[in-house]
Length: 562
Image (cartoon, one colour):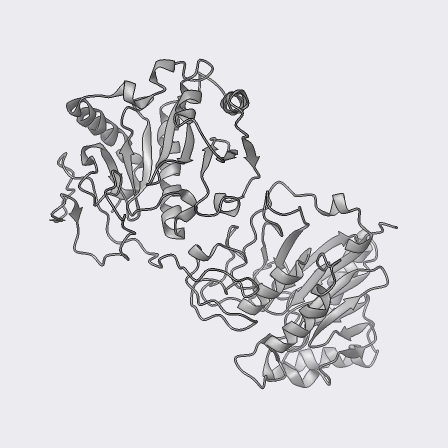
């Protein structure tokens, strides 16, 4: 089969600025050669007399359109009059209205799915809106085929809601941007390129994968690109040029190649991260801030908590650290402040040594307390700066954390990375979700002059092989919860390069494995400290060590900021 690329231009809202658009296209084609087609998303027509006059010149043939141009329908009531039919038609020589929704397949085999207008608030829908029935009618015939892998291009007027998750943030108000149904459509159709407009912004999202790593066969990645308005004063990008070989003629191994910056699928976030009500079909999302529910899958309705903001900070007691505050002391010895409290943290069913509100917790080891997490000196640590990041509430593992806890855990990791760097050290993070009831993220600094990151990676790999432990590398931008559902026993290491190693524990696992590797001759060369029980200090020594570390870490501690 021929692998001839199709040369495509995509454009944002034209809003009647036809001369500006087609002059720009001609300039590009003079420089780089002829393109095969121009795809316009968003509003094509304008409302001004100038826009109407320009359109008449092209409609009558007085001016020629320099490229085969395909446009979406109206996204507002005002523009509906420009489109005589919902089925699509030629509006002028070289300008084709695709229709309300459908699939257009070019002679090259390039498959383009499209949906015009905005999501209808109710039925019957106005002419400039699409309905759940429209989307089902588009999706069903395509996905009914066992050979369906996705479409080459998806064109929608509206953005998909939540597309920014796991990726770079767009310059739009994400509270109100986009459609939940378009997000579900994109997830179902798996477009290699998805274009949208209407927001007046240019946004190129990192590519995302369409399969679950280590659980499903590799599939192609999707790229979402939002384009700005033609000739916008801020000079935001409104034209996007690319070459694409149609999926049907591509070598499958080439098609599924994963770029380095690929992320998780933004539309398939675990149910625990979501606060919305799950639905069973296409429809508007019943939420304000989170993206639309994943309507195509039977997800659990068990929800993670929704408090997102940080109240005023809480601090470890003692050491004269009041910083001019007026805390109220609880019966358990914690200091809390008169601020609106977040949703209650999950509580254990029995005694727990690590829940901060528990009488069993050794508070003299606490270094810093945030809103959702706290930092503590490791008991019997490998080094004086060996610490633990722990959730304040009762969570067993990283994969069970709600999004706000994960976010604060990452802040602590970042603060510790900067702190260790100032000491000439790099950090290694590991977690053992096996024979433990409360998540402990172990953070161990390793002097830069002792070994490289590659040395650390090799030490873990070699010792894993020696003990018949299958340690696999997790692809970049993959979240742990994507490959280890809650309840899965596992061991996990994160290096300062961002590389992650993972072992799914099947039967038995050496409890001190992480410590043993780091204590080995190849790394810290302190093999006698591999077992924490051999490194115990007296309470006085622990208090002194903790005070010194707390003082040292304070400039990096975001929880102390006002």
